[in-house]
Image (cartoon, rainbow, N blue to C red):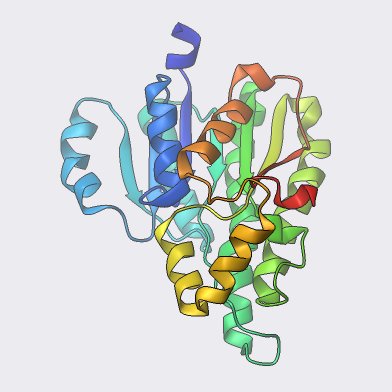
Length: 253
């Protein structure tokens, strides 16, 4: 248990959804967590000063698509805790336009927030992990990085495909440094962002999601967080370069 308590994690997109669930899950396992988000939870912000004074978990404002913002987050974490053992690249966005409906700025924003951010996160955190010859990185991708889905949002599919690809590539590159890099690809999960997007798409898509998911239900963010915790922890010490689907059987069909 003492070994677990010494671990320090950075989780992006930690204010809500899967990121918030992962934040809570790792905390219960004794991990010190630095949660970052472009729009932090107001409650987390209110507690930040008290937490900092007690050397507990902290929340930071963070634009994952900006390299200088990454440098600041890593510097603050290393200054306060002296190490980074875990990085969970979770922050992301999603919309559902058709190819001919999406404009160039929308495409570039999607790729920047969902894919460029993964590269920036690893680029900034890996040097510290290499110096300690230890680390675990979990990149949150999506079933739509592999599946054609509903034929919508090509930019989202492209961005998540990149997340999975860079995880495999980096896993090979840094295995000799004892840095494990894996991807978690959720299916449809009960989080506000996905629910809002699906609601806007109409009841037909909601019905099709349940029909095409063998387990016949949406997932819960805590179920994805459990897999993130597994891949970030010592129980998966001989696992790197994999992509685990948490999708109720969607990819099995």
